[in-house]
Length: 324
Image 1 (tube, helix red, strand yellow):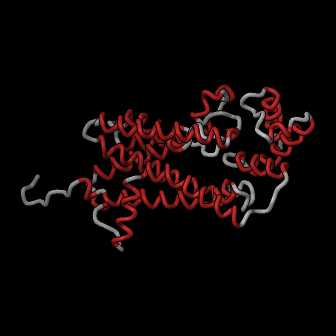
Image 2 (cartoon, helix red, strand yellow):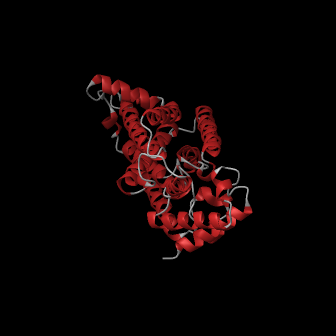
């Protein structure tokens, strides 16, 4: 270094605005989940938050988080993998993701979260280590390939549940939060490529300094620095608030068939088109009535995870609904 040059500021000082960006993304996520909660309690039409502007909003938020995951991975380990802090953070994320799976499995068994955003972050953190020493251009090419993969590599051979985390199955997957490796590892790789590019050209200073006003900067940084805690706490808090609202200003009362149709459409619409979900849910409800098991399914006594008869119905209705 030239002795007349001013030393670069410490990493934490230079990267403060990353916490601000992460905080903004978390606030955006909370607004999306607020909409989802109102839909869940029946204040909005089923599938509202799974289509159109709402769906685009959700994908922008998820992409932002994952780009920041890749960006941070490079910054944390560019001089060699720091195994201890990496292992601690990974264990925290894995534990949190398993907790979400267990809770959602109990609350919404037909569409529980088995591979959501936290599961993806955990998997991507491990997979990302394989790309740390590659140049930015190669990582960027890999990112594009991962994003494109579901358009070219889907196969019925990957329809078994063991492969659902890959995101290459041909059948529709029902989950309230489904963020599989393909294509969502792509944004993580994009974040890694971006970080390597900025480091190469010594442009990390764009993240230096604070935003105005100061209280907003401090608040967003605090949220960004405690992102996992915020993620785990905000949804129970939000859904509790909407529950209390529902006790004072309840939504319109629905019949069991309307409730079933709403919940079926809502869970189906997470990853499928509205027209498909309408056909699928209508077919499923009709078959459950024909075979006289609707009441048991509605009461939670039977579900597709433990009942071959219901599995046959959902399989048949999926096949029929895929036809134009």
